Image: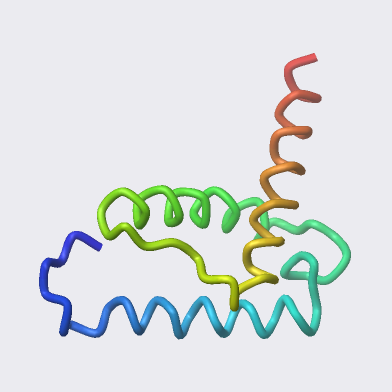
Length: 90
C-alpha cells in the first residue's frame, strides 16, 4: 500500500481480489455466507473499513462504482457491527 512504484501491479492485484469478492457477493450476498452474518463477516468487515480508509489516505484511491456489491457489503456490515457494539454496551 505504501509502495511508490506504480508499475508493481499491487493495485491491480487488489482490484482483482475485490472483483472476485464482488462476484461472490453478487451471487450469494448480501453477506459472505448468504443472508446470515457469519464469523468471516465479523473478521472481514473491519479489514475492509481499514482498507478503504488507508487507500484513501495513502493512494487517493476509493472503491469504484463497479464494486457496488462490495460497497453495499461494507455498508450493511458496518451497520450490523455498530448495532452489535451498542447492544453489548447496554
